[in-house]
Image (cartoon, rainbow, N blue to C red; front, side, top):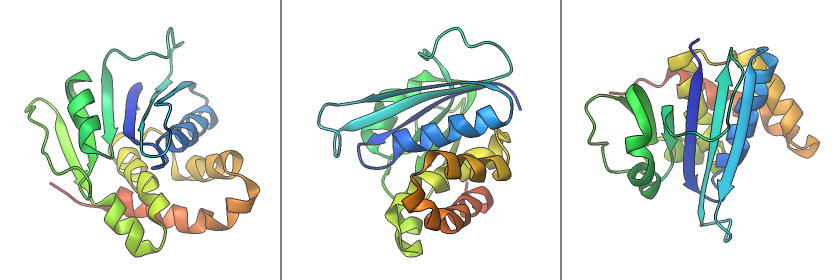
Length: 180
């Protein structure tokens, strides 16, 4: 795995910050240096939310990203805001259920995954972020599925642990989804 600088962005309430925290924790379990920097508007649910996650073999100098190797977006305004931050040769993963526009850049790889639609079909719309992380893991091998599951157990409140088997199915869906 190459070092990853990831921006995850969407509306508040989509689990953007939680997904970033889970990913960073899984990176720690891989014995990597990690950083998680959340950012959200004062209105929380329905407002904008994004986070920077860095997973690296090297010491992380700053949690603030000026460029990213990967962008995960769950709404159109986030794609508009962060599309040009992705490095040439980088990856954009979009929730194609909610993000209609195709990125204009030709120097990045774009993957559309119907995460929200699939999560609703699975019976829990909060799984959309996990589906998108599954695609990220499949493309980058940033963390193992096993460490991701441990990270879920460590970061989710115990009352939500009963959802972990279903969340792992959502992760697997994202990992195996063929698009583009």
